[in-house]
Image (tube, rainbow, N blue to C red; front, side):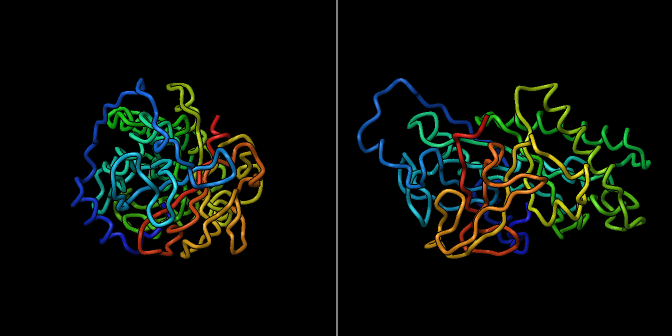
Length: 316
């Protein structure tokens, strides 16, 4: 995701030190009584909002029920990269930003202490320009999206911990190898080459790719489809016309952001000013606005990790 990719090497080392991308399986009982200590407030407000983290590991100390690092309150959810187009195609430089430890902690808080949303998954999506069978047609772009969706569902099933009803398509221009725009605005000589042969992809093909992904998830699972992006990135890929319009699609944004944890948001607005900016024709008042990566994303490191705000009241 367009988070601290500039610290990718450090993050990857931390992932490997904490178990790589292996899935942690957690078994917990939901039948026991919940103690007064376990019923402590979530810490985020208004009611229905939770704190969470995503992708690279963050250090969460202490015993269950777990608390959000640095700002306190319940640890309300973890969103991990279940897969990516570059890993799927075995490209050199492909990676997974997934923390088995954080997933297990969020899962325990959810199933045992009834806090938060548990574990959600996102797929680091490839545009038409990294499709191995790219031919410039909407039919092929749609098929490429569907193949990515099939692998997404397969990857989620292997991890066993997913409890969130929305699957996220991460659509961005990450600025990392093997394709700096993930094939949304450029066509590459081959998916893993990093060599651009065409510096243009029609917005209609980009949208066909996403539509193929969304249609496959909807037809082959009970999951709903969401998109992680930002207003500026979304426009740069899909333009401002009909291809950009997603009024009925769940959204997770990362703008604006802060590195100051003292300015954590209330609702959809930072205490220092600035409110979550959604995209594709939606605002933070939409019932499809679900998450905000308010610190640690967008290539601006806070030194800890990616912090999210999650509205569980709107999750479907």
